[in-house]
Amino acid sequence: MLDSGFTEFRLDYSSTKNLCIGHFVRSSEFTAGEHIWRVYCYPRGSESANNGRFLSLYLRLVNGGSGNKKITAIFDTFIMGKDGTPSPVHAKRCLKLYPPGGIGYMALGWQEFERSVLESDYVVDGWVTFICGVVVLREKPVPENPIVVPSSDIQSHLGSLLESADGADVSFRVNGETFPAHRAVVAARSAVFRAELFGTMAESRLSCITLHDIDPAAFQVLLQFMYTDALPGDDKLGDSPFDMLQHLLAAADRYALDRLKLICAQKLWENVSVDTVADALACAEMYNCLELKKRCIDFVVADKNFKHVVLTDGFIQLGPKFPSIIAELKERLKA
Image (tube, rainbow, N blue to C red; front, side, top):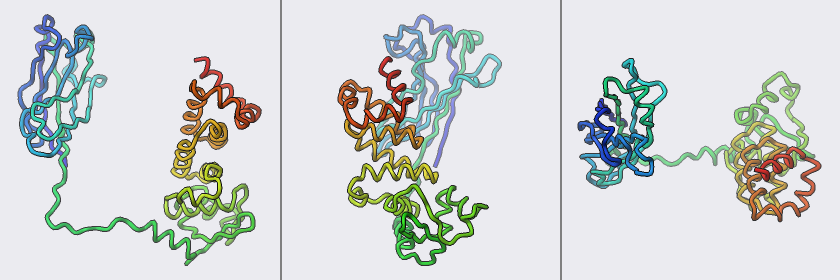
């Protein structure tokens, strides 16, 4: 729920040039969300370190903040140009949280607005006009004796559907193993599978589709993710979860499962070490995972890691396979 209020704050700019840093002028009071507010303006800034070059605006809660509830407010500010229309360039929006009992609490809205820009672009006859708005985000009241709604259990239902294979209308053959599935579910989760199962490709007419370049164990986890949107625990990812995650990231890239790809990337990153970072970096490069690649490069070039990483077998093998990565590392080290 939202409740808003606005005020036009006209500042006699010509009279502020001799004000001391830290001195303020304030707007008239206005209401929003059953609270009373003021805008405090520091024409020469609130901090001496800025040498009076900036104007600062703050939003202050004047009344209505008693009790034990926090107040969340959006503070919008824009400046009227010399032509009488709002500036399309200079505007500010901030989300502020006022603590319980926060009467008198002041949150920063616009800390550094160049006075020189104000003088050249916005001052008219010695005055500058700000339009300030406050939108209070109010919690929806909870009715008495509410009806408790259980959390969604669609994950377990779809997981059971996969496990039982009830109504399965397609199967996937992976290195001698067969995995029954449901065309609609798989197609809904992956655009790649949708093209194979419902498009003009030959596979759309087959009841059993053979997949290559993927391990059966990895495909089983992939299929489970498509039904439940969750990965099993590390203890269910085989003897080497790190290796399994690399296989899954590759499969997620191949079948356009972006969420799975990022989940795998995060788990790989959580387990990166001096010994494994080269493998994770190679995986990120091969399967277009920029988020993981950037973090691995940052890890390698860190002073405490570099001299150890370059001695690992994984890093030694990285150069011949991915010269572009070595070039990026050299550029980072030069910087």
